[in-house]
Image 1 (cartoon, rainbow, N blue to C red):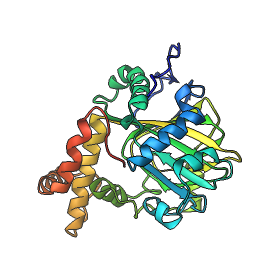
Image 2 (image 1 turned 120 degrees about the vertical axis):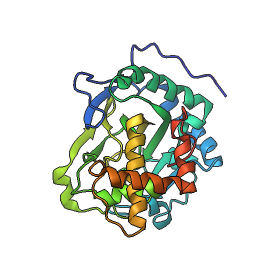
Image 3 (image 1 turned 30 degrees about the horizontal axis):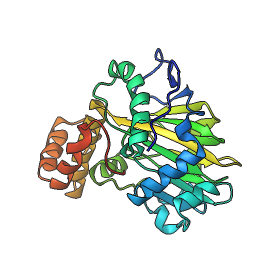
Image 4 (image 1 turned 135 degrees about the vertical axis):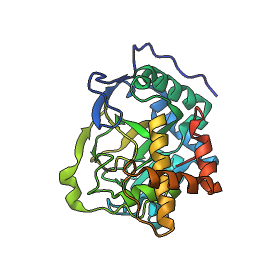
Length: 302
């Protein structure tokens, strides 16, 4: 495997740190669009390596905004291999994500370089960066990423083509209920997150082209519509002390809901938060999931 090509750049991502708030959506710019590891031939090779590890997620372009995100690959399968999808992306009628690229030695170096650059500024506002990961999305014309949210903070950066990204605040109860977030953090289920077309009016909208991107906090609902050409997008993600604490509180309230209780929003009742924490200690499945969240790199697909 070849070494990572060196590029002489002062920085990869331009962030307005005077305006940066780890829990606020904002636009960014970047300089990754010409990175050698994001060229098609390198992506084909990476996709083949990750597919052998089961680290590729894909579905056809029949998925829509309201398609359940977790079920999209089963509902609308893409029968082509990851390499064939990439080589024929303009006509593949597919959406594909190369998951956890930090598992690959070449791409772990890329993830490290980008997030090491950002970490000093982020640490002053949101300490404890860990469980760092990278994701590459390759998309055929007009394919859609269904409405969903993720656990990590996320810098999403457009490398090739154009797409429209809709993002909603992490605490918008109209587009994602407290119950939906509790369930997600407890068991990674998203079935309570339901799309309505009227949500578009409440969104932050980013029309991205190469060199542009956005930052979205943990559990910011989002949906993506690809443009009229093929697209390549890369995301760099991580957890912090604050994301872990919010996840723990939500998961604890999710455990209370499993008992038929209706807890208030997290942080509103010390008793509910404490009871939820106690229930989590009794759930081995959650303890195992939470244990690796302080590792330097993410090692499992979300």
